[in-house]
Image 1: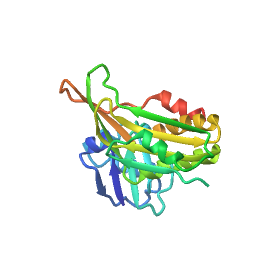
Image 2: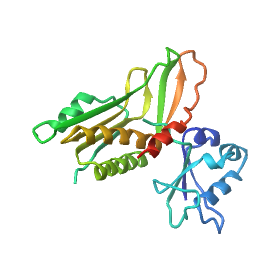
Image 3: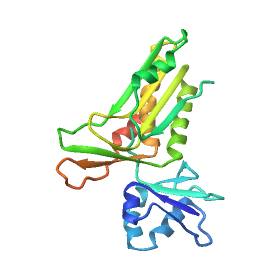
Image 4: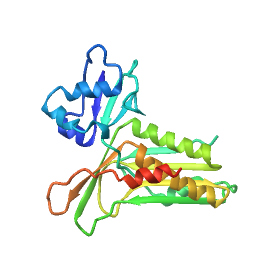
Length: 83
Length: 151
C-alpha cells in the first residue's frame, strides 16, 4: 500500500512516501499506524503521540478505527494549520 | 446546483478579479463577501511561511467544504483559492468569495468556509524566521476546532 507522510511526520520519518505491505490482520488505519510505529526509531518518534495523528484513506479523513478495506493510499499527518 | 470554483496554487491571486469574475454579466447577486487571509510578519520576526499541502486531497477537501456551504446557504457562487509554497509577510494565503441574493448568507457561509477549511483542508504551515534561526511547524489551535464546531 502507498503510504504518505506530511509536515513534521515526514521530517521525523525522513521520507515523504513509501510502499508498505502490512502483516495479515492489519485491518484498521490505527492498526496500520501501530505497525509503522514499530519499524524503527524514527517511526517511533513520529508516532510517539498517536492520538493526535490524523489519517486519510484514499484522500478522505477517517477515524483511527476505520477499516482499511481495499485502500490504495494511506496518509498520516499532524492536525492541519492552513487558512 | 452551483458548482464551486476551487484552486490550489503557488502563485498569488487577485481577490478583486475573482470577485469581478463572479458578478460579471449578471444582475441577480445582491451580496458578495470576499475574505483574504494574509501572512503576518509577527512584528518583523517572520521571514516567510512555508505551506505544505497534500496534492489531490487538498483540492478534494476544499470542494467538499464548498459543496457543504452550497447545501446549507442559498449561494449563487463560491470561490476558494489556497496557496502553497513559500509566502512572504504581506502576501495573501487564502481567498474565500461567496455570493448570494442577500448579505446574511454570504457573510455566514464565508465564515463557515474559513472555519471548516482550517480544520479539514490538508495544509501545514512552517515558519521561517528573519533571524535565520530554524523555524518550526505552526501548532494547530484548539480555538480553530471550537470555531468549526459552532456550525
